[in-house]
Length: 204
Image (tube, rainbow, N blue to C red; front, side, top):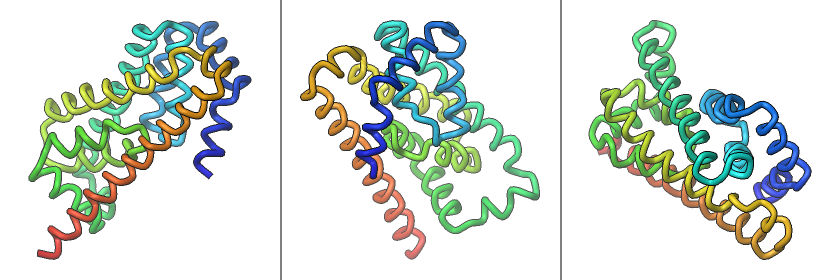
C-alpha cells in the first residue's frame, strides 16, 4: 500500500504540475505548504520538498521548505503549550500513552526528540503536541526542530533535486522509492522502540 501511494505521489504529471504551481505563485506558496503540513500532517511533505528544490534549486529550495516546516512545527508546539492548562485538554493529557511520552521527554529531553524528528514519517504533529505538554523548554525544543528538520529536509532535497533524471532513469526512481521506504521503516521502528521503552518504564 505504501509503495503504491509513493508511486502515485511521484507521478511525472503531479510533480511537474506542482513545480509549475510553485514557480507561478512564488516563494510564498513554497513556504506556506510545508508550514501548513505541520498542522495537517496528511499532506505530502515529500512532494513539497521535491517541488521546491526543482523550482528554486537545491539550496534555496531546501531553505524555503526547512523554514516553512520548522516555523509551522514550532507554532503548533506553542499553541498546545498555551492551551495545555485548559480544562478541555485534561482528557488528552491524561491518556496513558501521552503520560508516558511526557515522562520520557521530561527525563531524556533533547535526544529522543531529535532522533524521532529526523525522519519524514515520524508523526511530527503528535510529537509537537505531546512535547508541548512536557516540561521541555521552548528554546531546547526549537533547537531540536531546527537541527532535526534540517537533516530530514536536506536528505529529501538531495534525493529529489534532479527531477529530470528521476523520470529518465528507472534505476534512480527505484532507488528513491527504496530510500524513502527505508526511512519510513526506520522512523516507524524508532517510534515503536521508544513506545516500548515508555511502556517498560511505566511498569517498573
